[in-house]
Every structure is written in C-alpha cells, then in structure tokens.
Length: 342
Image 1 (cartoon, rainbow, N blue to C red):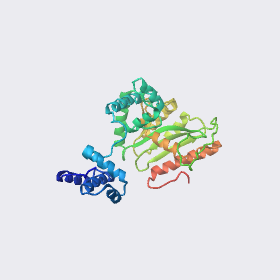
Image 2 (cartoon, rainbow, N blue to C red; image 1 turned 135 degrees about the vertical axis):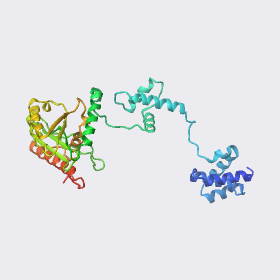
Image 3 (cartoon, rainbow, N blue to C red; image 1 turned 90 degrees about the horizontal axis):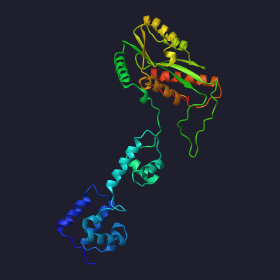
C-alpha cells in the first residue's frame, strides 16, 4: 500500500471535522490517523501514538482510500433503517392503543398480524418505548355516563364560587369514604429481594365509614369529619352539616346525589339551616372529579394509613381518626412536616 496523499483542501476539511463538537473521540482519532498518514507516519507508529492496534489503523486507511470522508464516521450494524415500515408499525400501534381495552406486548404482537406486521413481543416493546408509551395502571372512569352539558355548567358554577369565596363565602366539599381492616395494596420501599406482605383481614362487619367535609381555603382550611363503625345514615349528614355554618358569611356545601345526601331528613335540615346561610350545591350524576374532597380522601387512604392491616375494629377506628386528624393539620398548617409513621 503506497503512501497516503492528501491535498491542502482535504487537509483543512479534516482539521475542521476534528474541531467540530458533533464528532466523538473515536471519530477524532480516525481524523488523526488520516492526517498522520498524510505526514508519512507508518501504521505501527500511528497505532502506538493513539493507543490502538495496527489492524485498526490499516482498516481505517483502506476505508479512507475507498470511501473518503464516510470512513471516518461510525456505521450502525445491519441494513439501512426502513423508515416507512417504522411509521407503519407506529401508526398501527397508535390505533390499537386507542381501543378501550388493556394490552400486553404479546397481545399487541398478535393484533399486529392482522395488519400484516410480524413482530415479537420484545420488538413491540421497543417500538412502544420510542413512541413514549408506558406500562401503567388502568383507571376507573365514569365519563361515559356523564351528561357533558350538566358537568360543564356545574364546573363553571364551582369556578365562580371558588373565586368569590375569600372572606365572602365558606365553601365545603362533602363526601364519604369507607375503610376496611385490610387497606388496598400499593407501593412501598422494601429491602432487596423482598416484598412487603399485608396480612388480610375479613372485612365482614368490621368496616369503618367516614363522612368528611373539606374546606380548601380561607382563614381556617381543613377537614370536618364524622367516623362511624357502621353504615352512614342521613342523620349523620345532618349532624355534620350543622357544624359547618360559621354565621359570619354564607356557607355552600358541594356534594353528590347519593341517597343519604338527598334524603328528606337532609332536605328538611338544609331548609332550617338556610336561615344560618347554609346552601347545598348538588353535583351532576357521575362527576366525582368535580368534588375536591376526593383527592384528599385518596391521600388519607393511601398515605396517612401506613399500617395497611388492622386486626380489630377498634384499631381501625382509631387509625382512621388519627389519619383524618393528621391530614386536617397538614391543611391547616402546611409548613409543618407530619410523618404518618410517627
């Protein structure tokens, strides 16, 4: 193999490539190999100078003679990417993921066969990753049962109430929450190779129910609640409603249309309490997303109860009251750190 000849223009082009921020260290080494060979260095001498093998230098110089500048850059193994096929696969996956059902990678692989696309589960997962898709828990929804116009009107009315509440209105969100001796499983840190086990307890006649009124802001944000080791009744709702009006400004209580909320006993009490400024605002059916207390109850259920199993009804009753009280203090004094494990 004769000496490598490089004219001044190519030499300057190589120096520009070596100074570019777009090339990596290996590509800069290849540029140096060509420049040093053009200065008359032998392949062994270049190899010793750059800390590579003689074969690497000879292969690069041979590639330079055959391909020119293209030999300097890395080449991905395998055939040239088929971008048209990739786009076709991604479009098919987008259509499948929009279907109202759950999918595993194996099921998607089988469903792609109907589109004439043959991919294994591993390849499907790679495509899903490039599309930004994720393996996530499913979520219950009531959207399909809602009346969009009623929900839109209720959302607009709630927005007006929230804007006018500061000093002029006490706004509460009211709902119930049930607690079993064994709480739903969730996530927890665990030692390597282990998994947290939650002892299961039979919930029969050992459930605790809480009626919670949430005040999101004002001079005294927080919770008002009743906790009972039995089914909640209309008179429990009346009892909590009587605790809400301050007498200083109007009070609006947002609640859903569950049976104990619309019972005659509640309606009669609301009529009497209207003299103290209390008014009930009923949400449209199947619209829990409009009730702000729902998010707080989720926090109580999944975070404020770190002990996920309770052997006796009394233990569960005390734990629920402590959890609600602790969450109330978080809302009232947001700067304080209240650990649920304490």
